[in-house]
Length: 180
Image (cartoon, rainbow, N blue to C red; front, top):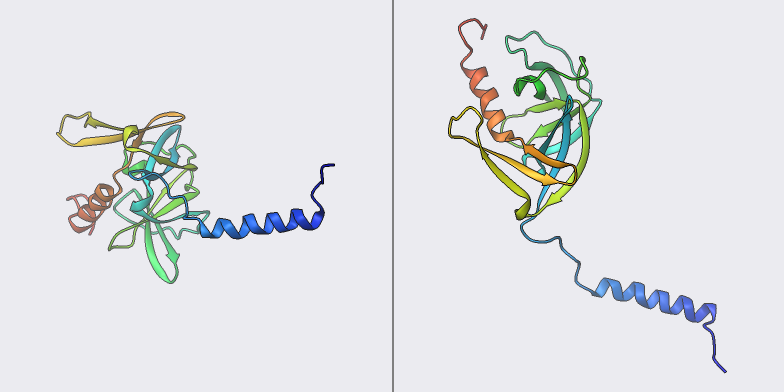
């Protein structure tokens, strides 16, 4: 006659399996993978390396300021630090899709505080080395651009460091028509 498990036996086996799970080494993600955020600027998808940012935020209040840089939306407060917020669509030479202030922003990883605002956050993805695509700059200036293959297709990866350097250079050396 076969004996079925009693509730006490079942609970004991579950407890044992639970305890044993802590003795096992954790399963780590595959080496060489890169974490990305996928976003939208208007109808166009883009990706941002997670390592290039300190945080993703939604619906932050932005205090508008007059500026010679049309990309500057204003400033916001992050833990007591005043941070300039730039419209990512304008920095990329794109028309803003929503027509108003973008809802989402990333706080850029770097020495100078800086936030970039955009219309829509889509997802977090982890991609392997085989999913990266390098392409020459369309203007033929010798700079390479990166793209990544994800489930929805090929998405350009934004160079956040280059965008931050562009902002810093323009702020340090305004063009003749701009007020410093």
